[in-house]
Image 1 (cartoon, rainbow, N blue to C red):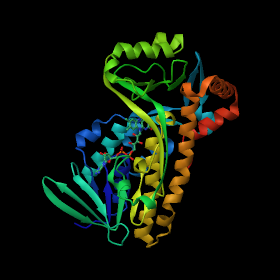
Image 2 (image 1 turned 45 degrees about the horizontal axis):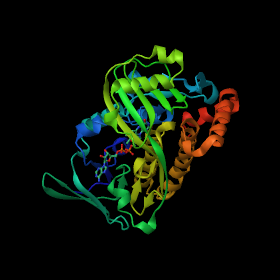
Image 3 (image 1 turned 60 degrees about the vertical axis):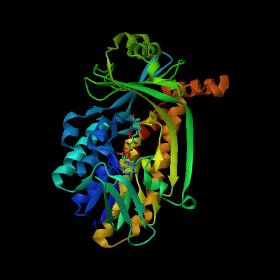
Image 4 (image 1 turned 45 degrees about the vertical axis):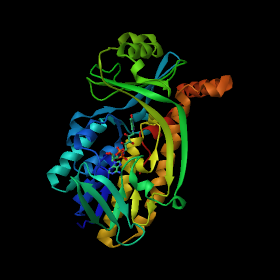
Length: 389
Ligand SMILES: Cc1cc2nc3c(=O)[nH]c(=O)nc-3n(C[C@H](O)[C@H](O)[C@H](O)COP(=O)(O)OP(=O)(O)OC[C@H]3O[C@@H](n4cnc5c(N)ncnc54)[C@H](O)[C@@H]3O)c2cc1C
């Protein structure tokens, strides 16, 4: 089989790239190792920057997002029992939209199926090769049969554990990483959100976040040690601990109910440089990971795809490799700023016992400054709504 671009991975990055390229008349195949149901069932991100929404509209999958997405003009912080709001709209001129990653994925999968463009689920042993030459290939096995796809370019959109980055020779890639000594215990629950907007909670017992997927579905997180066993967290235990970290008024308003999903996610900062290796391009989590505190993971996958789709479209339309040559540097410039923001939000809001009493005082002083300074709130708002592409 021959296509112009072979895309590895049907997460948000691979599906969105596939859609934008298909709309531009470029022939693609998407190879995904999991089943469609498995990919759709993964509960992950839920907050979209305005730029991500615009990109989804441009890809032709914005209708349900515009109908069902919840527009948030602000975000709240609860610091040691005191709540205050950061007005995103007023300070940064933009809003964010609550719309689950599962819904983004569903819209993109539906569009792919409708377009008739190729997508293979449950593709085994997907292997990119020859990307240092002009004729790369991707091989895979499906239902016991071996297949080989010849292509002009490979897009590695296969997430942090994917094969694309692993296929690059060690000497050609440099990685930067920070691991955190805690994770986020999250539950999904069909209960109304405790507030119209997100509440980020800094508390001496640990960070908490009250977010949502809709007006009837809440997503709630607690900072927990990495050693924590999910089996030790009954729903009642989770709600009790969350209440202890909220201010008394919010705790009293919290509606509790059974969880429909519960998991612990470790936190990590990670960047691989560059994001291009001959005719292989990395996009999304395949190239970088952020701790979820800044809500940037999915949004960074979208901005990478914006740059990469533009570059590939310009290659086919104008026979120009200039944008492809610039892809890695353009994408990484935005990636590093989002890495900085996600790291700084993580440092600001979580408990770091290793930092001692001085570290705690520095954190409190910074939070107090944020609560009272328009300049500090503007800087947070500008980053939170997403820096321009
Ligand atoms: C548990 C968890 C919770 C998260 N919560 C948040 C959050 O609250 N907010 C936020 O902003 N971000 C969050 N993120 C991050 C966000 O979900 C990711 O940034 C986003 O999914 C990136 O999209 P992607 O397409 O690059 O990668 P992925 O969504 O990981 O998609 C990669 C795809 O490639 C497939 N694949 C992998 N290896 C292969 C292979 N060898 N062959 C073929 N296919 C392969 C995978 O099955 C997957 O479908 C979370 C991530 C995780 C893991």
